[in-house]
Length: 600
Image 1 (cartoon, rainbow, N blue to C red):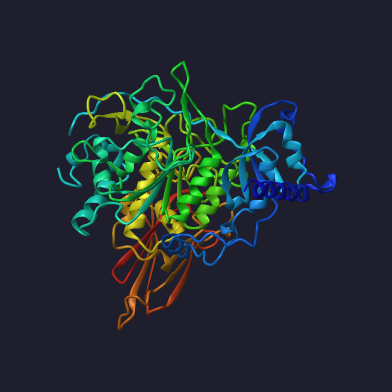
Image 2: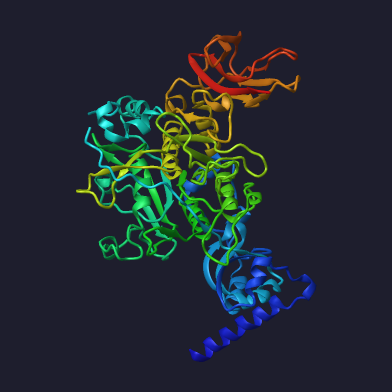
């Protein structure tokens, strides 16, 4: 056995020598921040991105649920990002002194804790494409107001919701929940699988009793300790002097905003959904009583690959990566907030391509322009800002645009004085308090996405996002999509309630009409559906209203089955005032509504 081990180690060493024996001109250049470290004896977390993958090894086979979701997104067959990272590359870096943290196969990357003096050797390997710091997250948030909420029915009745009524009613959620309960005899979120990435979760809150009894936790994993439980032991939870005391407070609150069920006290958006929970944030208390966060983006990247493979439909993440505390790491810059640069943004973008709806907090670093964090900068990530009960943008809510001048956030929800469980310090497990932050507006929007997925089970992730955006309404005084409110507040009733035509039958573009371009026109394409064949043609009508309800334009005609129609509006040279407009199609007893904007 000892001889065999000796031979194995020698073979690994010889493999390493062969892989790293290249001309010096082929070596990559280390970034200045990494180069400075090579003169010191330090251990730093780095991403090592490889040039190619091991094509000989079989690709990972995702779960049947994941395959079905990918099909709805138009992604089928074996894909390169499912291919494993080459083990011989990992072994070679390990032989240089690196300790593997996480493998991120989608980007062909592995994170290591690595001796800084050895970094030039890594840069000289022919199979290494790039070396980057693993970034730390600074997720500053407004303080929770420790004020116990009083007990306030049936589903849809105001008293049923207790202190959570305001945050849900702002998005029309009680109406959808009542419809599902009374008409569909099902509960909100049933059949939907939601992933939540946070700092840990406790399950002893009163509003999570149903979550426990109905076994709604499908899978859990701690990507910090690399074990299969996301809850802290009682030795931590009951010990205020522990450096990880209250580590799981934040995650319990974000989970409860979706999964909570405590009638007359507190109700979540989609309490009958199933959940995948990942501990990706590493929080640690310091003597001042503040919290220094050391969340690493490699935890997040690994978690999203894992969750996607299990078939997750929606991921709610209240994390942002831009400013960090871990010296000598350097922060991401605003230039990097373009949706394609950071590792976490790359991970989120791939997940969205595979049909996962990623809902992410904008961050709490506002109100400066461009204060958003990754992955909220990704085009296909639903980025959520925070407003108060009066629909005013929260001062702390991070703003867009992205560095490539795209508007962010995508929408907003209540994030000031949101009702949440009082995880620590309450008189019992049914105590509730108020909290603020985009961390809390984000799961509310993720819950609405779950309701859309439930009521439209054949929708792809892209159609779920489109339905969410189409159901947004501007707040009073807002005249166009902007970098504070995005498209405004989603209305779950518009997105979920019946009577709408399938989105696949109807296309309206562009969503924003620029009237400075005199040739710019709105294009409407519609095809009558063969799903409801009729003996005679049916009346098709299209109408455009202004935000104040004034009729702007209308057209009607009879359509036979499968007959397409294409319309243009307005005529070139027509004078159209800037503002919000609503487009409505009626056909065969069904209605489709869409909102669009006219801007200068």
